[in-house]
Image (cartoon, rainbow, N blue to C red):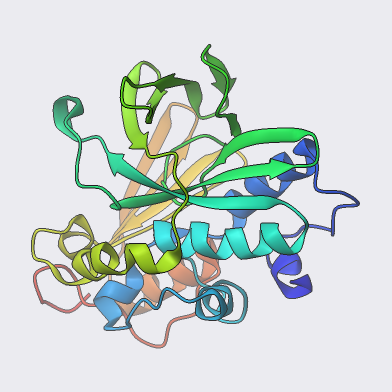
Length: 257
């Protein structure tokens, strides 16, 4: 795990407390991108602790929710936190909910601290952990969040008044997510097969590469640039996300990237 801490620019915390958790989550978001490149490179996503950590640490890649939150859970447990994997249904247009197990988030406790909602695999979400047992607004650099308990005992997570996802409260294991992870990688209806994205939080905003469209945001300022040629696109993956590729992922639709 020393290599993991070095990967995100963190020092080993003296104790598994709330302050350390807050720092670890933010550093992870600033260094490990949300990306679905494996889907378009023909690389299988393996939901195994060792494989997930090796991808993030040794291969210096990112991933989508199962990979990012799965790997981060391994790190947090090694540091003394109690971590549970929670299944989530993601809200679509109009607040309609998708299927169970379509997203995984983390419930994290430390000695005398928590429960916290930690999520480093949902793209534009909270920068810091959210309290799962607080029902009032929780301001965050990523927005204003609120956790609301449903009549069935699940937890709705809202950002700026809009539903982001609904969390089950019973713990899961990584193997529970294998069928939906496979679906995300293979189904023509999956958002991940339909799009090619690599996105990273920055100190001033966010940088995202959608296929060959590079989008950089700083506050309310948004700049877009279409990258011409394979060399420029490979350089963007390297310079903005620290990802060294020997070939470009295939673009959605089956054409070259």
